[in-house]
Length: 259
Image 1 (cartoon, rainbow, N blue to C red):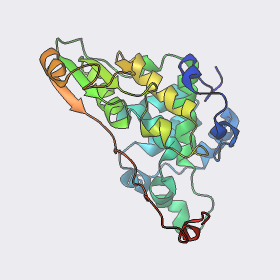
Image 2 (image 1 turned 180 degrees about the vertical axis):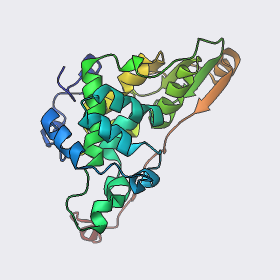
Image 3 (image 1 turned 30 degrees about the vertical axis):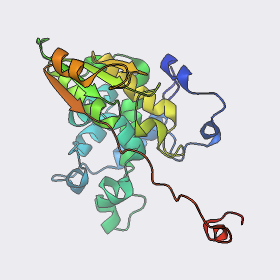
């Protein structure tokens, strides 16, 4: 499978979506491009890019592995620190975080190391090759059962880590497609829906069950979740968007509309 291409699960995404017409602002590297960019890195000790990363990924470490051809090891370094390292590589504001902290900026050597694009390359390459589910060590299965309400980034991350610790985890998502904001709210020039669903499929491969189209309170009761599980994680998302409501006639031009 070509990196970034839709998995069979992405058949749920309508082919006529306008976002599919928008090009990728930061396309994934070809192997040679990734190695060349990796060799630009100085592999700093006490690297400021690591300090700037909210998830503390060993950035010099994973870049060095790309430079030596160990892409699988690079992905392991990323995902061991951040199970959602793929979507973070795509949508994280790296210009004000890790890339913004790169020492090349102070030296006025441009561009700084393209950390996000290298991170995407490593994880996407391993996703495409298969076997990503064997990258991280898994604890023996326990008798613990956990339910996660919602299947957005919070629940996906929690479920993935719990599964690695041996718990049996089930996600309940009221929408027909999992992924939450990554699927429905990310600007498509950063990541198309299929990118989000690649990550959803990775979390599913860790042994997580995702029940889509199942709403808690309608299809399953909260009482049943509490009875059947040892713990319940609530990852219900941001809620409804704000609305301007009714705009008086004659004032809609200020909002770009017509009176």
